Figure: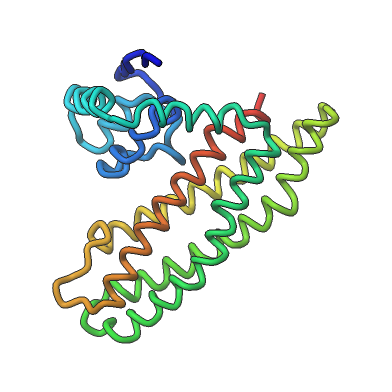
Length: 239
């Protein structure tokens, strides 16, 4: 199967680039370009905010697209999400991301608390990390429970029986969810900043290093989670 070459421009919306070419999400993460919470804006705007050169970014994106051997798999994979009906996509989000958060957030919390207890006197930023992470954990767990118990069932119900009043009520709830995504994204940005891009200091013990690795994975998973909701699922209910 021949693949049409991907062409990006400065005015392409960041989230649309990731939908069309998922590998771009890795590039955007590496360059701290927000493609989920702040992804609904032109690439040039996001790039300028980071102090990067738009021509260089476009050149590197095109190079990545041309040389990425898994391009066809990426396209098939993202089309799979786009083409999923809402109940199936919701089930995927719950099983892949919500279950992950319920399992991982408390475990990482133990690591963050332990590292702060042992190394906090030497590395004062760990106290701030503990506060930020605790807030993130509590908010994400509450957020996922609310989605599963209140929001997702209403989405499924609306698919089955359209009512204008229900549509408006659901739209308002989705706006609230997107605000919560923004808050979580901002906390993760703060965590990345105070941990020097999840880079442990030279004196870090094994637990310290594992904690940073798990925080980096949590960020990656959260970005994917928010991307699926903000850019694929939620727009189906926003008119």
